[in-house]
Image (tube, rainbow, N blue to C red; front, side):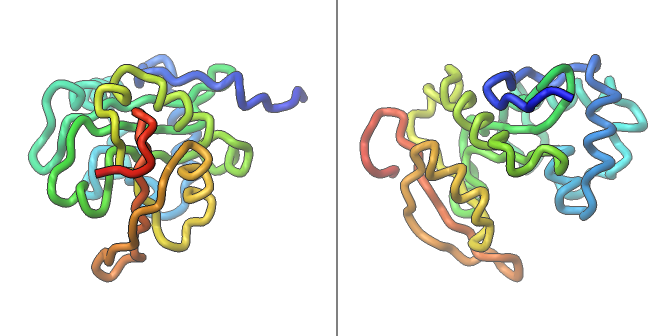
Length: 188
């Protein structure tokens, strides 16, 4: 078996050619919240949606870039690909609504469990920040659960400046960070 090389990851838009790999990755997730994050169509989306009609699922993921469904904002989703395997998902929201401005932020990511603690999230975020979409926003809000040390490290490693901790109802509090692609020290 060869050694994992994080710099060989590439971000690609969702594509039906990765159906087998995507569904295998999805099977690794245990909890409902992780499955919802992996699917990326909202908490109310049935977890069997990708397996039932993968082509339609991919089409919906890609269409959110142009037209957002109710209660969503437009976003661009990428899959992290390593040797033709889907190993992560990262998305950038084009704008923020009230919820995202406080809790969710511009960027969300999740890594396939079998590829965690290998630098995948850091590399996905690094590559995303180099896209024209990220550069067009200039100051990006990114959040993580207060107790999610791994995500906090990823954010800080990629230039995230801590702003605050905010309540999130009965869920863990959120740490808020700004990544300023213009080089200023603090977000808005």
